[in-house]
Image (cartoon, rainbow, N blue to C red):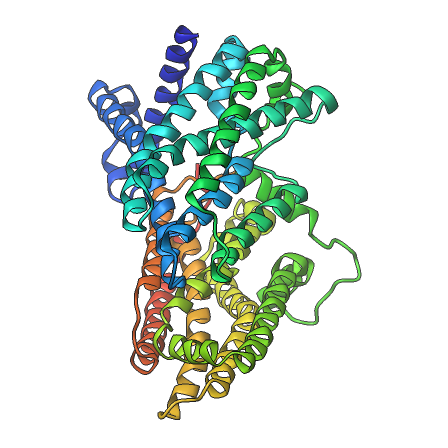
Length: 523
């Protein structure tokens, strides 16, 4: 089994190194300097190996640090009392959700396909050796951060130490359950494409994780120890079952192949399939517009399920939350006061919220997969006049789509502010509304401009631009950082409006100048 792990590790490392070299070559300026022959360069491969090793070490700790800091400890500010109980409760239920969503065993990846079906490695040895390694990574990666953040939340050190063991045990239990389901029903679970039942359980776990502490119900240290003991016992039986299971190759063949051809069910392929299933191809869809306005109007109408349905759903959910909040503040004076303070000092929170609900990135994915993917093969479509004409129409469409939920939230916040006691500065009502609209417009423009300037997709609709990935990551972390800020609505709102207007003007100018050169299919 050790030999199988060493061989698989070498294979994954080679794949990573080549991917790293490819990503480096995609960065502007650098790609003009580095020739393709550098794939054979020993020096560059050594650099790739060093980066790969550093990344492997980071994979032990970085994700766990962000997870505990953001999803658990970062949420402690919501709960004024019993920090220890809140920390343990959130950790317990999020672990269940994580175990269901990410087992490490049912994630379809290229290296698994290459190892088991190209190199003909023993599927059982390959799977179990890598699974053991993944479980070790979980325990080693979590320990320093459960101890650090657990102590800050007044959790006993013994509980902090056993928390990673609970995580590993939960993953093993669900992994074994999934194998059992395959043995009984022949259902091969693809964790990149969870069924509605799984999403339902995850949703319940999230409600319990964050909802129970809010109403004062938490899991004690003793109860958590009991849960962990039960999980460890279950993990032992799960490990025995995994060792006896002998249909790994058969199972992975269903997950990784279709008619003996690799069709890795990665995130891009899943998105593409979902998009295509929602296209309306009925012949009665038409438009009375002309030129690229006609072209874009047809696209929006045919993709209304993708573009408008989600925006309407988000708007409906936002309206429901606002109505519930209105009833809640009228029933509880303390909640009314806290809500007023939240609106007046926590407008930065809504930067992250507006980022999450904005459909810009989904819309651009749909544009490429079902329009630009084919049209960019025609020379006329890549002319400056064509690109800029369609760009203008798409800006209008994306902004219009995202304004629907933004309008609901933008009206709801001033209403909540007024009901909870109002403000001395009457202009705050207008600032709240305009700032939310400005955030929506900003993200709409931002996603489309990034798409046109960095066009990240190749012919297979896979993201192949490291620059686009970096830009998207910076956007996410910048928005997430806003959750840490508490600034007066007046000043932050005005700053947001000014920034959104300036950014939109500058970005549109840059896109108009550079898009005709950058908007192309990646190789």
